[in-house]
Image 1 (cartoon, rainbow, N blue to C red):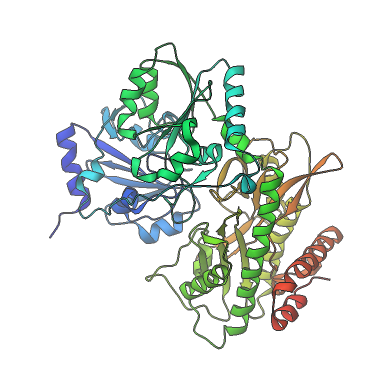
Image 2 (cartoon, one colour; image 1 turned 60 degrees about the vertical axis):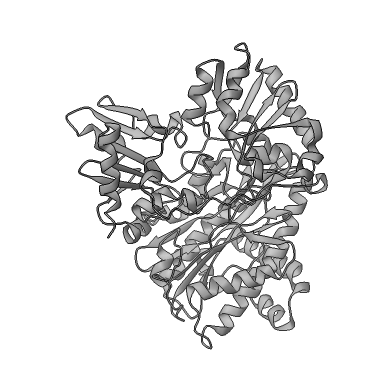
Length: 577
């Protein structure tokens, strides 16, 4: 019988002379989705959420999660770990309680300076970088990393050539009197070169880094088996290639008079220390994040197309589940599979944009619930069913949540749903000013709920990529986001409410920011009916009723040509006139 993982890890403490070790969710690319071979946090703790930190000491072990994952973590966490809500207690607060100075080890490729400082830096803590990852040392039967080829997106799909984008970055570098930009976010490399990859089940990001010089020289830091002859032929002399194992040698070969701009969000301590050792550097947000966030007309128009396709699939699914809930045994997993089948009917569909949240009854109360064989339950007629899903298409990324019911619901649930809906509408119709931030909108979205002492423990919205990450910054609608909202940005609008072990409600549309008569406003991308049977229309004002009427009519007008006569008749009945 194999020894407990914590016991095996703690044995390594003796070898490396440390008192503890920290483990993040992310891999060296700091993306949301991690290859199974790099799911170190899940391997050790059992927790499968998209964000978290583990702190293992000689006698104690902690798993830190945010408010989205408290219920999920409680269900998944392995014996020996204590779950802590990170917004209430940071790891450094636990470390401070120790009387003696602690030596804590970490993998420098998996941490940025900002994360370490925010979570772990304390007077009585000495952080020691360890080149060898200690989880990898104890991980028996670790899955093998699969290498998949990158592919190129033609300019007709992205609106700007890679040469044009390189010029944009080089001009920024020249203005800032900088010579090199180290791009450590793979999605930013994808945007710059108009390339995509297959390194994630949910996002077409190509796991790689790049260095762009102000003289327009671009060096792609990538494993050799991820690129082929066609790729090299396409870029010709415009692109150089460097294996990640040779990065130190490459930096050593550069003149010490070179300087760098490094990203403070995704540049690992490993990269930062190697650069700081020889070169002057500036640590700021990679300018590509801002450029990428403002979609051009081609990207917006293509995204509109992808949402029509996606809206057809989701509308067909809602009709199907409502008409079969009393005829078939439908479970959370089978419903999820059925929705995927509807999306797959379109040839431009690539994959889900994230792991679908298909939660019924008490499971719908977990904001980021993921159904599995252990938790999967039959969806009952009396249940509230929350489905948060999305798709990756050749020309866009979608993300939508609908809360569905199958019978008459109690007045309280209808009233709460309507308050969530009021918050959703208040964001949708908000007239943006030049300096409007996501923080301001977050207050607007929560106001209807807060009047009755209700709230939700997640942000109201996130940025969305273009055939890239479904969660994209720097823009967001949250309590802490101060980024100004600009024309061309795509965001989600998704207020909610959750009662532990009872029910969950969320309404999510994607919107983009459009200029209209020199003013900015949101325009809906998502096309799918909102659950009419959960609305208490008496709680809505005239503006809100007008919005619902216009939105539901728009859905019917655009989608009805793609539906059969039964689906059309049903969709017509969802119009809020």
